[in-house]
Length: 401
Ligand SMILES: [Zn+2]
Image 1 (cartoon, rainbow, N blue to C red):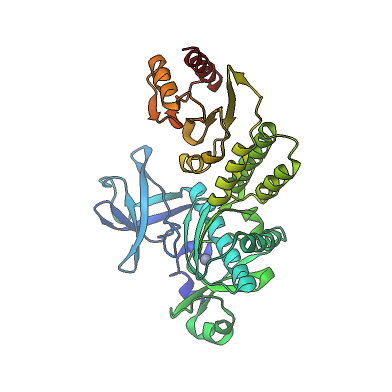
Image 2 (tube, rainbow, N blue to C red):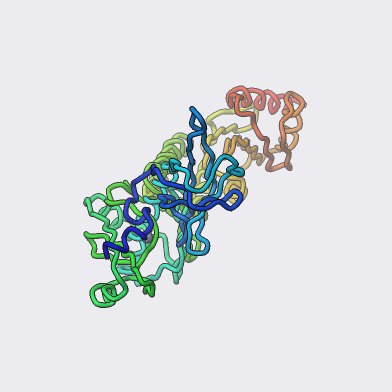
């Protein structure tokens, strides 16, 4: 085995190595191969590595961007952003990974091993495929799952993450694999001469996998469910998931401010839903519909109108449109949603579209709409309070006419 190890990719043996001094072996236009590489060429749903190539030119050092890595003719090729005219075979260079991207993908991919293990064990559900972006996993499984099922699995998953389990990379010959490991694996079999196995020690999960992984589950930090659509599940990893969860908490706090206190039951229903840190689209529409339905009737009056302002930056147009039918009569709502778009909702004689037109006389806003629903895109620098002031003035004038 040891003789063969030198031939094996470094990203299997030294997954945390982020720089490497090596030599150029071949150049084809923008594409370069090296004696050894730490760059992962992509595969199994994992994107390839990017990074930099540094080399000496006279007294100074220069660099090229490596924009992608791929396998072809049994070699790993690194594609530069432009032709490496100063480079030649045999030349010594320094390779540097875009470590931030690489490490987040290592975490996400290992998290997927763990999640797939538990959905198999708890729900007898197979993972069909998985795609990764930094901090994001998209998984497709072989049957439709409910939110409750996935949340239950995730609580086991997150508990296991906290238990400090090693993740081992095992490299064996096909012969040894057949003898010692084949009967224990989850998922696809391997026919390769050299088999790479990934083992999560604590739960005895063993998979044939040529991808990149972390050494300890603790590094994942946690997994949050973002969305389920039938058999497709979107999960968020670590700090990214936490950021998302905190936004949901903000949502609850705002919610408490605007709904009637007499309906504590309602608040609890919604709270429970969001405390699981989920955002399933249907649930969001349902929740927003409940908020609209229970809007306080006398928070702020602009003449005859109940005026309500909301800031819910995680909401998009579709969710809002699907929720507005529950807004009570004689209400005017301004809702600052995703991407700094301000939505205007009216169930009164004051037309949302007319308010937008008047606003456009004061600033070159993009937007439009109809009587009930309109939108404008605010500039990044603009204060929402200033815009609100203008809107209230406009509504006031319109009612006087
Ligand atoms: Zn893997």
